[in-house]
Every structure is written in C-alpha cells, then in structure tokens.
Amino acid sequence: MKKLLLLLALIMQVLVSCGQTTQADNQNDRYKIYQTENLYCLLELDTYTGTIYQIHYTTDNSFEGKILLDSLSSYTRNEIRRELPFNVKHLDFELYPTKNMYTFILLEQYSGKVWHVQWNNEERLRFIIKM
Image (cartoon, rainbow, N blue to C red; front, side, top):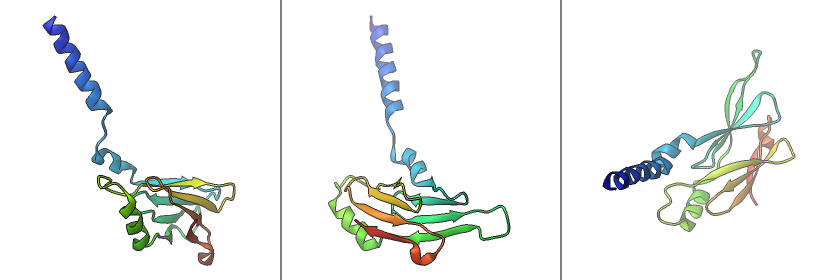
C-alpha cells in the first residue's frame, strides 16, 4: 500500500511539474511573425514592447530587410505598466489581422488597450494609432 501511494505521489509530482511553464519557457514567444497578404512582406512583433517591424524579402535584387513600422512610445508602455498587477513582469501584445490587408489590431492583453496598426511600403502610410 505504501509503495502504491509513493508511486501515485511521484506520478502526480511529474504531471504537475510538466504542466508548469516558467518565464524562461515563455521567452521563446517574445518575437512573433505574422503573414500579410503581400507575398513579400511579413510583420515581426516584439510581444513585450509592442514594437512592430516590416520584414521584406525578394526573389530579385530589390530591397530586403527590416523596417521599423512604428513603435509605442515609452510613455504609453509605462502608462500601461502602471495599470498591471505588480507580479506581471512584462507587457503582452498580440496582433490580429482585419479584412483590410494593410491593417492589423494591436492588443495589449493585460490592460485590453488596442491600437490601429497600418503597414505599407510607403513610409508616410505606416502608423500605430491608439483606439
């Protein structure tokens, strides 16, 4: 009976420890890539800061690289952080596509704040605006 209880306790410990994630485990999710409808453009999101880059690639000799789409100001990030529980170590942003191929919605998942994000090949048409 003692062996059975010991075995059950050991199995429970293994199951509980496998189900837990640590901050280090989640660091792999800090940067995410999102497809756009443009064949040669992707968006890269830093989920901790809300910073978004356009990534361009090509099959010919035209421009390839990363372009800063826009960035949330440090003031905006600090404003959101003040609303978070003390045990939250970083912000948690996610991008959501819309039916407009150039437009995404940026959501900060703890505060619920949202921004209108527009990417474009023309710099003057790129922006992030708080909604």
